[in-house]
Image (tube, rainbow, N blue to C red; front, side):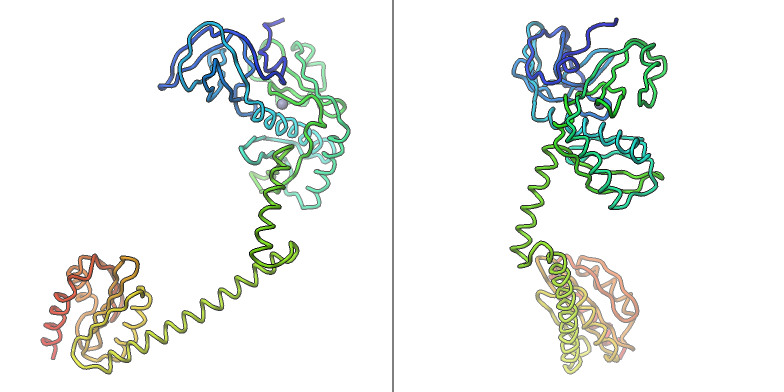
Length: 398
Ligand SMILES: [Zn+2]
């Protein structure tokens, strides 16, 4: 037999351990320690690494490296006696997701013929990739119910190590051992449901999974990714949904069943109101253009506080269309931003060439088409200079 497996594997429910620091070092400025034995699981097999403390110092990561288990630390520790504590809440959550995945994968394959090709344990939700082209909501419902039956059956979950010869004689569900694998093979059995190779930490009974809640699907590489949450995560998720629904009921004044319709009605109202506001703004812009056209002078000037480029363009287009040999320099300011538009009527001059000059005089830039040029201005201190330039153009063309 090979050497004794680490404590996290022998006793996955153990939360404290007296051991010893046997090696220390640092990598990338991060101190690490190797222990005689450890209850902290190193990342692997889709399960994230554990957290905890080593002699009171935070363990921020655990990784297998060069045959040893390295505990990355928030501060250096000395060689010698060590007390390790496990962040049990995090670990138990991982054990619920991980054991839930074993059960989900076994049921999906044996009852439905959907083989698992990948597993990810995420911080909020986890997923399995199933070799199924697509899954309907009814499929998901049947799968979730079949998993729930096995959770209620409270089936024992047992890890064990076997020799390679024993392994080859057993009906193990596995994607194969690594090339050149030697030593014992670790198996995890869910009594009557699954026998799998796995080095992770597991619950001792399917009842402790509590629930596997299937959240939705996403097509992926010809298969289907199924998102799920197990155990406490699923319950906390339900609590968040309930709180959100309560807030939405209060905000929209509708019961749960009416929330979607209420939200859709509000969005439709908003779209109508925006359309009406745009129409009113356009009418206002036309009135402003008409007032400028009714005024005298070759070069009209107007400032619109609180308006934007779209408004200036609407004024400018209406002005330019009827201006003849006249121009208008329009500016607007909103929230510290300044914009301008130049409208040059037929016979005034080249609006685009003049626009670029005006933009330079205003310390900004812009662009346009036809008789309207618009852009941003650094500030409005250059307006007088720009008006002077336009006045010369107006005089030259008359
Ligand atoms: Zn496992």
